[in-house]
Length: 375
Image 1 (tube, rainbow, N blue to C red):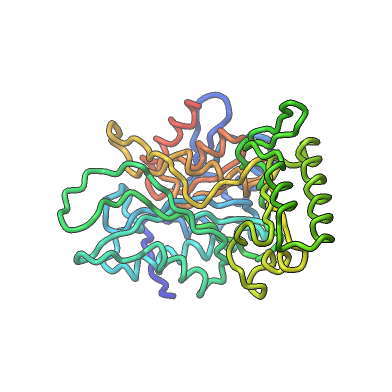
Image 2: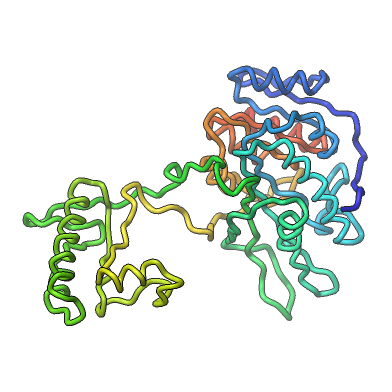
């Protein structure tokens, strides 16, 4: 990977935001400041002014729990302070981001997660596919493991006067980890609240109205099940209904041989459920009692920038919430190496997490201070 990156700012300043009172600016040794920040209970963010690679080199190895960031778009906006996004060639943009993310990988704990929001760009009417070019580069050249590709549906887009293509209203959010197993992930913390089962006329009714009566009738009339399989199916169905009644399940579906199609595939070599259906004659789809986990399509309105004179990126606080809640422990630290006006840090503070933000533009960080102090 080319060692090419903008280095306009090499002197690092530390803008500390106390939880109470006015903000102050300090210029201490960052390693010491970082350790002091980690050792106290203050969740007010630690902001640093400087080039992302230069600043990150001062952070200790494996010291960060979660990184959530949205780098500058390539050649779409003129951000104050210059930096990444102004390269003439998009390959240099990819290389420069790679240098930052190599440092992110170094400072991230083995249990940590890296969430990357990226927008695409056009060149000579050609959609470049920059998000996926970067994701594949990080996987192939740096060894990141890609766990999810999320579509951020912004619901509405900006003005688009082009007459030969569709409007663009989505961006990618990638979830990377350093190890395939053992990384921190609290899936229960991001589940939606499930509808509850209830009892109607003495019968247990699941969250979506399933009583088991229809399944019992299908078992009784089945010509695909043997008598032994029917007995086993009845007993298993009664056990599932008891689990719903006890609150261990919120809902379920029963797949019976010859009555419902298997999910995903009928091939026993491909689908374990197809194999179970052949061997037993039935299986259950169980709904988690704590609700369903989010999908990989998020409908979130972008930040309103109409009255903003400082920074125009649409990256919203709500985009940060699932990543932080799911992959940063309550006593962990969130990092954003492209802090901008502090959106990631705002989200972290609202969620009672410590955070560190880096940016090359002092004006943006001053604005971030004002936002955070207003919480």
